[in-house]
Length: 295
Image 1 (cartoon, helix red, strand yellow):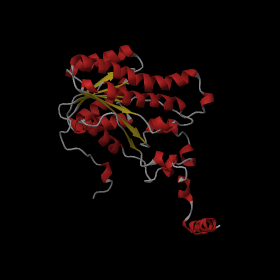
Image 2: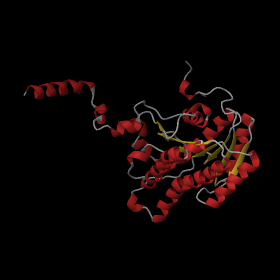
Image 3: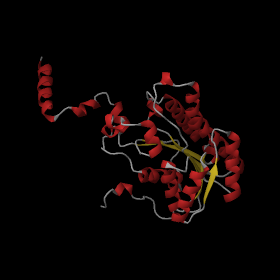
């Protein structure tokens, strides 16, 4: 087995042939990683974000690697008119869109009492409003045209647990998860599927610097919280995303799939901190427990 076998492409060649996939936040990070793999599997792409220069560079890179057509479209997903223009541009270019990947996001750490209402709005607008803007615009189009399609939303594990110090993101991601599950039922009759991925730590330069600035990563090493002892590889997430937008997953609907090495479960278990107990101390603990049992 080659080193880092888990970081290798998973699906067979041509698995996304004929597909047209739109990725918001597609110019960098995980959006770019997913796009590169989708194109490698035969899909044409529309990648959208607010930074046109970044999109153009990424589109050129993926086109040269894959030979597929990559359309960069500048779009602020918080603006519904711009989202409608994104849809129009995509249809004019490709004649259809088969899958929407709602990946655009924003986040930073802060005590909640330090946040202004505007700071709160910025995160909620990008994550939640941006997702429902795209979902509504594309969903209405698909329903009108009676076209089967799928939506993949990128959420996070604290969408269901909540998390201190990233409250706007937790609120927004929880809303996206509710949207995913709700429409999976309501719009299934239109042949529309909705699923979500909840990634753990997949380091990207921009997000990593906002969430763990300065030397905070050294003081609070997040890898220590992950049972498998490592962060995720971008290809691992791209493999999962490709499966969920492919026809192989046509019976998967309304699911959120966690890919975090067991991180959130380790934090959730009441006694998981006992992982830190050295082996020698367990002998003493066992004796103490036996004494209690015998009393």
